[in-house]
Image 1: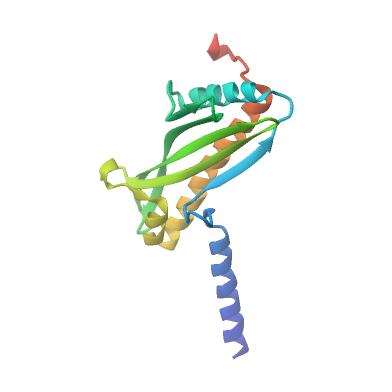
Image 2: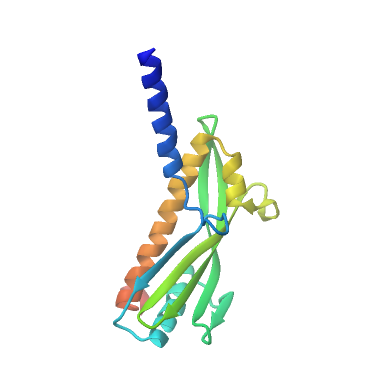
Length: 177
């Protein structure tokens, strides 16, 4: 009996650990959402707005934005990346995850919000896309883990690059001659 109770406790802890490592869900919208406010006292609000636009254009290789408002100091765009999932421990599936990234600026700080994640199997096409939350609910535990790992890695990379750019500004490299 003690063995059974111990086994149930270990399994319960394992399930709880997996749930805690899941993607961040906004309590109001129930959507996967990353949001962070970053203090940046060293540059003005106007300069921050210009840096945000320059970073989005450079990082995502785009020329226009879905939102570009100097009045509200908001700039936003849509972006995507690939996620590879394993089925039956040997088959791979290529998938696409798209999202919206919004940058708001106030004097002394900026806020980045990444949300509205959509998911679809690349072979099925963009017309089959569904919200990531819905796709995640249908996934096996193995695919949930793979998706969580890859999405978190991508968003961490985006946030790290944004922070570096906002602090240092555009630094020319040999490729930018």
